[in-house]
Length: 191
Image (cartoon, rainbow, N blue to C red; front, side, top):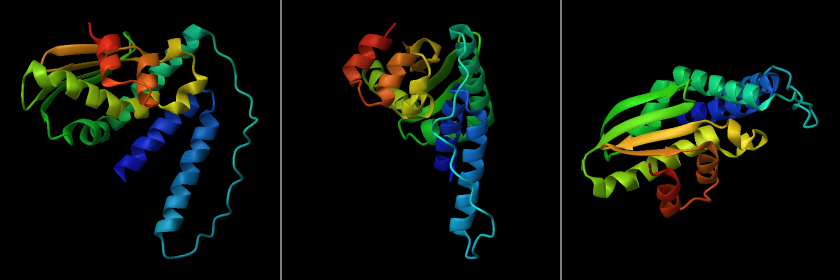
């Protein structure tokens, strides 16, 4: 159930970033209705809604407005889903001893995560940073954000046992698309 909420949040984030807030709301309502009707023994009496038309026009934003909007939506998503995101993507990892920071820094346009591992050593820190970045990438930088210019995507800062990595939006999008190896992650995100 929580995984579904994360996927829905990511879809709403990407649709909202594309200027399709109404489509995101309709999709969320349709998803809720289909979940309710499929999990219920009674047949649904609601009339199915037509799917949104794919040829819907979107408003074009300036690069600054788009970047600000993506940051705002990301901030709202993190604020509203912090506990679920933390539980599913961080605390469920058996290699993590403690989460010391998890927030969205709207001024820096950066999703910030800091953890300590059960190993508390540099030998394993880099691999764990890659693993966590790989888990976060589909949620905030998944293929749904293709309509957003790369410069508008937010950054990801991850610190594991004091070892920091900062990835730009295009790097995280490549990670979400499984186009980024662990070696390339270290090359692009090491400070």
